[in-house]
Image 1 (cartoon, rainbow, N blue to C red):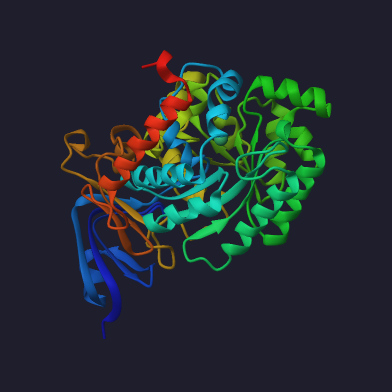
Image 2 (image 1 turned 90 degrees about the vertical axis):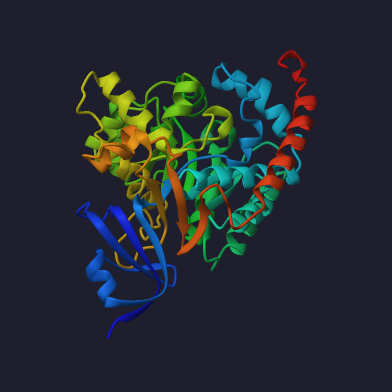
Length: 444
Ligand SMILES: [Zn+2]
């Protein structure tokens, strides 16, 4: 008796990213209840299942939806507003003044644009630190994308709170509201050691423990941060975090650029994850995270885009390529960070770093989250090695279809979850206001 399922997908070529990294030509995927029921050669999967619907991706390279483990999605509205400056002057002179004036409506709009960009380029789950995340959640829900959202915790006032107690109240309310949510989970997102007191740091980790949620922080992003933390804490950022009990398996440390060998040992011993944002680090000239050394030490490293103001995009295909190329150049070793390693970082390692191991692979029991790349694109021909194409040849704009939990959320230029032309009109209107506010006459 064939087994009932919701959808039978026919894939021209499937990269499962399962434990064996199985690739299958002319593959079948049986999906039921938002999960993968069976994977295998198409003929075998088709013979064993009675699907309610069919999805023909026979001209496509299908892979698990990508997992973006660090960003500030609503910053899409600030894309290209100010560039070509180091991190602290860029934040203090350009970003923080205008960010402080953005309304919750702006945040939600920026989030909607971010979700569209991520789905358009094959990302199906992202981890996000920002303010007004209760509002931003609405855009995430309309888009139908998965997310791990945390209200950013700073010691100083933001547009969404005036005191640290209010910050924690908002962070906890979000975690509570997201319990049992089908697609969105909560995390605790402390901005950085240098923007919070030891008491706030400990309180934020207690909150993460109480909700059994990921705890994420910007850590060792620049040498300037190292100098600031050395002065305040008497130790470099990583040992400072370790001494304060902040390096735990639930910890996801973003950037980790300015590391010494002792820092790398501490990160590995703690079992925490690291999220690497190559484009943001390069653009802000923060330096090169020692990713090959982190991987050699056994640290789980995943990929993130950071915000669109410092990247300037949310496209993980660009991050895979940047990561693989940069570390080869830095190490003067073409074997550093091979194609399969960056694909792992953008899929299953990202899922593991978010404590969500059902994502980032397509195997029985995993989430039915996938991206399909058009194999007829000239830059994907000929095809000898699909992993090589994903890491080095694809741009992300070959994505024809993106699926989350068994539902098509992007297909051939259209987003079934929301009105994209309407969104563009709202973005143009918001950009006019931002340009005025930022006094961008100097930069017409
Ligand atoms: Zn960041």
